[in-house]
Image (cartoon, rainbow, N blue to C red; front, side, top):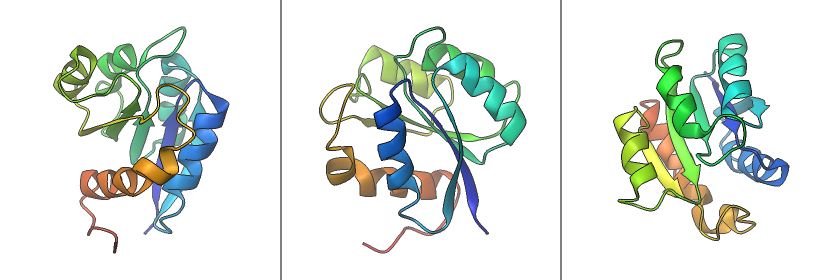
Length: 138
């Protein structure tokens, strides 16, 4: 059964790259996009995704602020993919405390055009783990 994924990132280019990464696994389908946490909450209500890929630094409502509200309306698993997602960073620690199941740092800052090459497999595996699926073949 295909799992539905919502991508929340303020960059159109990053949303496109992440969509390509997620849909490289035939068991995932990106059902929607949001450019900030406020739109992300609306889309979560409408689309009821199984999981979200969430950036932390966004205008209007950050990923952290979205996580604070998300637990009240959805059981969706959250994978943070963010330039401030380095292990041990204050944002990563806070995102974990708020329920993010995995945190993956963008390798080259906010505009990581190399995300697919450097972190694509890691993102797919994180989604599969979060959703209780078998690991994808390497």
